[in-house]
Length: 152
Image (cartoon, rainbow, N blue to C red; front, side):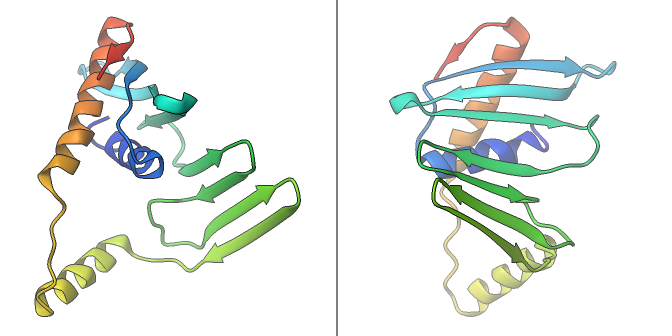
């Protein structure tokens, strides 16, 4: 979770724009003791639920789905890729697919950092953002270890 799971938690927080009130989780641990596969549910107010799974055992795959009463958005490879990224939007009356060009996320980060420094427009993410992510990751670890729902 502390490696690849942080991206899942971060994107769920950005989409919901809130902290979950509780989490539930289950992990399969590697023989060395660290979690190798984790599945978690993040429970928010207004009956929102964020579901995530991440694993070093699965065949490499990334996807993001946002499902609601009015439609569904799906993004393949949401965390950057060297291949085209497919984004689809489905509503009762419409279906659209967009293809985004490949990007090297590491080069993009370096270019963005350079641009902000050279134009003196550097605004680092507030520490509270990282702390919020870590609180959720800790709660997921605790829920996985205890088998109990953990309140935040």
